[in-house]
Image (cartoon, rainbow, N blue to C red):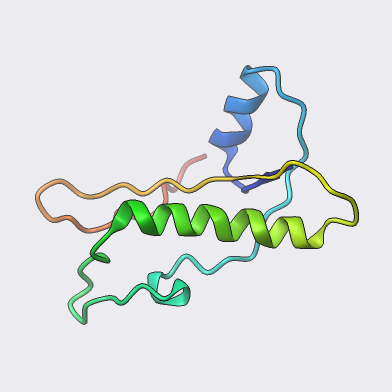
Length: 95
């Protein structure tokens, strides 16, 4: 199971010959939703790699909880920081 709606992740797994099914989790990607404090000025959380790991885990756990039988679940998150600002870039617009 792939716990992601990312077309890029699906393409990578297909290119590697992996058979999988996609289940898109309904996880808030806002840092404060996972207990990461954010600054009023929009500065990123203090530990972006830890936030990305927490998001990936939350996605996988949410999808695993929806399954009736045990399956391997891959949850992933990518975080891009804008050079010179440390701010988190948004999701790409084009698939």
